[in-house]
Image (tube, rainbow, N blue to C red):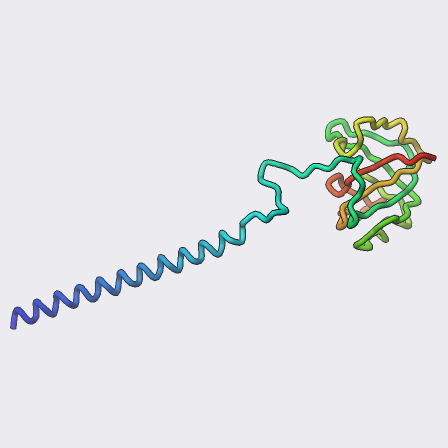
Length: 167
């Protein structure tokens, strides 16, 4: 009888160890699946640039079809923020040339302030040429950002190009 109890105890211990190992394996598989699903959502798409690089745009390029393009008159003096390498251009009488997202009503009846980063302007840019009364054409990202201020301001990340028009 002792041998039967020992035999039963031995098989009972093997059974418990097998159940515990199965549970551990199941947890490991579930954890791995959750990790793969989470990591899969963080994958880079073809449109995303690799980290450490940035998308650059030459201001002399023609605006893309889905770009918002406007024309207006410079009001006042073009000023430069030396610390941030940004030019501030106040534009009035803005007319829409192309606005695929129809977002231009934010500033078409008033002035708009463009906060233009130096790298968006052409190398031959001369702030004195951009004087009050001159007409400019500016291109913005299709879903451009504006502030809720008076006048509304458009930050540099939304500005693709700015060019002076011949009067």
